Length: 197
Image (cartoon, rainbow, N blue to C red):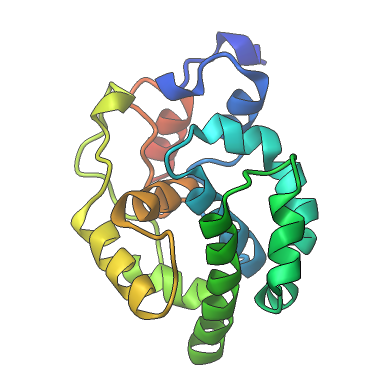
């Protein structure tokens, strides 16, 4: 078996163990669980303007602060809950992002009601499966920040009452939950993905 340290990865994974674990075990793998899809959407919103590693290091704190990602409970958060979260040093204490998480839980429940699940709604943007790549890039810095599809998704989410879901956040979300496979050409996971196609 190849040592984990010897494997070639996407450049953004760096050498932080948490980042490497996230890259190897989560990023780019298709997600269909509504609770996980919700958690990642909220976390991507909190990441806006910050590094993903900052969010990753606080992810367990976020899970606890947001009631194990119970969408129903978060949708009922009051101003008292917002103040509690603003006092929680374990998460990103940004009032607008906290309020957006509550708003997004409420909008998420409406989408579940309309489509049966958020999974059905979200994956309808790509026809129910990960999008094929036109060309795999070698340098992760050349990956797009947004695409026409992430722009369309952002527009639709905003129309449905979601917040902190701009086209860049949507594209990062699409990457994180596997709608797009943006592992770079020299990444060991890109080779696996290519072989499975």
